[in-house]
Image (cartoon, rainbow, N blue to C red):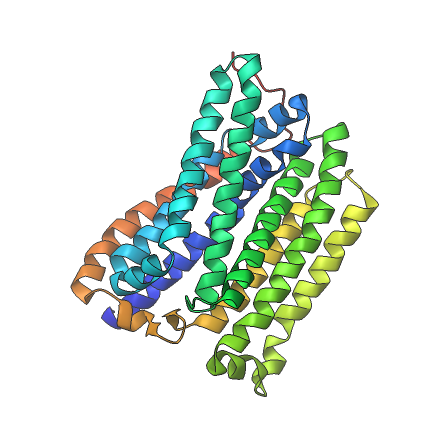
Length: 328
């Protein structure tokens, strides 16, 4: 059992981060899209994430908490390499949280200020996470090229979140807002695709080990479904958006966006495993002692089902089209 404990925690951390990216990604995307919506549309978009947005960040806390407690050696290296973008991400998350609550109570002349703060906090958090991803993939090296690459991935991840936010809006709204969201989603889709291609090309170049895992036969053959499925899903999503069909409830673009993120995550996880820090530290080397992991496992075994249960219950209760925003 002790030999399996580090792998259990790696899987838990990976699951938490994937769910966070998808769930908090769409409400960060809503914030990023705020400037292109009018006042009534802003209220509708905010109403669509109202029951979910705060709880979505629970998955980030869980993922980072597992990294800190179960893999402290890797946490130290990663936090040292990402100290500034982590700080900016936290500032962004705090700013958007404050703005979300204050816009409720603000007078009409001040609401635009809090709408902008919600946008700024969402964009700051998204760009910080994208920059961290770029830096992490390239092993925390500090050159002009790696900085530019990380900045490009920051823009593409923010676009990916905008895609999730726009496709969420398609699914939750009707009428003119829904049609606008289709246009936003199509633009964001192409920038998201550019980011996926950039990460897919850069990752094998970082490490000969990763290159060999993807391009040595017969591995290339059985891994081919991942990029092929990604390409097929990308063009299917673009076709669905181009047709502007919403008679099915508008769920297809959101499902496609989630599928793209899941496929990209699977490819990245395969490239990196078993390393938590690229070619420097494996999950076994970074793990806490078996006694500590056994103790932590009890807490995770209690907490994780509760978070999953609450998430499923909340989405089931508040599923369907969003009604008119009201603070009464």
